[in-house]
Amino acid sequence: MGWDFCTDPEFQEKLDWMDAFVSERVEPLDVAFPDPAAPYDRRDPTLRAITQPLKEEVKRRGLWACHLGPELGGPGYGQVKLALMNEILGRSQWAPTIFGCQAPDSGNAEILAAYGTPEQKQRYLEPLLAGDIVSCFAMTEPQGGSDPGGFRCRAFPDGDHWVIEGEKYFASHADLAAFLIVMAVTNPEVPVHRGASMFLVPAETPGLKIIRRAGLGVEPLGSGHHCHLRFENCRIPRDHLLGREGEGFAIAQTRLGGGRIHHAMRTVAMAKKALQMMCERALSRTVQGEPLANKQLVQQMIADSFVQLEQFRLLVLYTAWHIDQGHREQARLYIAASKIQMAEVLHDVVRRAIQLHGALGCSNETPLMRWWLAAPVMGIADGPTEVHKVTVARQLLKRHKGYTGPWPPEFLPLQVEAAYSLLGIDPAKPREN
Ligand SMILES: Cc1cc2nc3c(=O)[nH]c(=O)nc-3n(C[C@H](O)[C@H](O)[C@H](O)COP(=O)(O)OP(=O)(O)OC[C@H]3O[C@@H](n4cnc5c(N)ncnc54)[C@H](O)[C@@H]3O)c2cc1C
Image 1 (cartoon, rainbow, N blue to C red):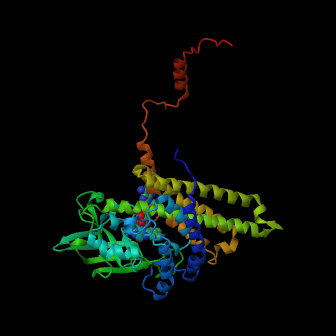
Image 2 (cartoon, rainbow, N blue to C red):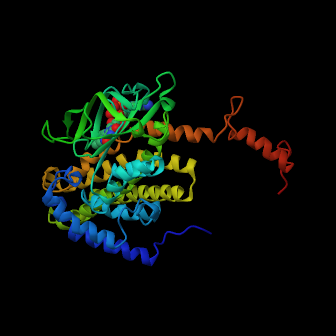
């Protein structure tokens, strides 16, 4: 019997160390350097000097790049253990960087490892894994993100080069990245799922321009690191194609599945912390001469949050388990289900935590509003909720058959008739007592 909800004691020790390390050494970075892009800035010498010893400590403990297998310098713990780790790391903006598993570099490293040539790995993957550079993943376009059928960015072969023409939108941290992984249409004659390819584009390539940087929420206009890019006669060597021509979507799926579930794991961390804050506030704040915790409406908020969080957490862990077991179809279904749930759970739990904190909750003096903004982001980034609902529904519908005639198999009059016939009962005949 394989069901077990225990964490083995040896691994629990690692989690306990991580928990203390993140609280004592990493969360202070969130406070001192709160810009969400700061963890991606490898050029700032102050940040480098402060973070390098922390990264070294994580490496010494064997906890660096835990999303990767040993062949790539990670411990290869698998997704269930990674989920437990991300339940700690996700509460801090800096922790994923300090532990070498921040998005989108984690996913980009995975596709480079899976599809890169030895030269590509040496030039791009090695410094990425070492944490010396960051990367960008550019797929979304200004006129459409969730429907790849609308992608217009093209790449054409020209002698020893590929030439990229077009635009990309919301390419996170393109301005801080050493290289970009760019999806471009190489064959418009076939459906985009077979006609797009991936390219490695060094940041300094002529013809690649950042035309605007968008921020999130209330960040001042002009700040932020989600870049609108233009490629104009952007020439890259032929060997900068990643994987084979036309394989762009297959490659993207490799990284997006992992990326989505890792976001879900980190969402558990944010919601957990918000629930903790909610409980502490309820016990500490007094209204009408008694703690908030005594009010039944407040108790309801806490109970509802706990139930939602635990359901979500188990869904994420179960998804992680499917991935570890190599159950590809199930993993796809459960990743989509987790993706759907994460925005909703984060929204509901953080909303209640803000409510219980009153004005303080609405202020910029706690992390709550940052997590609040993360809720809609979780429902859009890596594909909107609606698209994942379609995936879930389609997968489930594939597992079922329709029936003919007007009555479903559960139509009771027919079931009674069948049961009587099976049991040899004549309904017209009175039963003997
Ligand atoms: C914080 C953040 C970071 C991001 N980083 C990156 C990045 O680094 N690289 C990158 O390439 N992209 C990135 N994105 C972009 C993201 O992947 C897209 O926003 C997403 O795929 C949706 O595309 P869109 O914004 O064009 O929305 P649209 O495609 O215009 O969709 C808008 C809305 O329409 C509805 N909708 C869409 N499709 C359907 C459907 N089939 N059925 C019903 N309703 C539907 C949904 O409500 C959806 O939210 C990021 C986004 C955010 C918010």
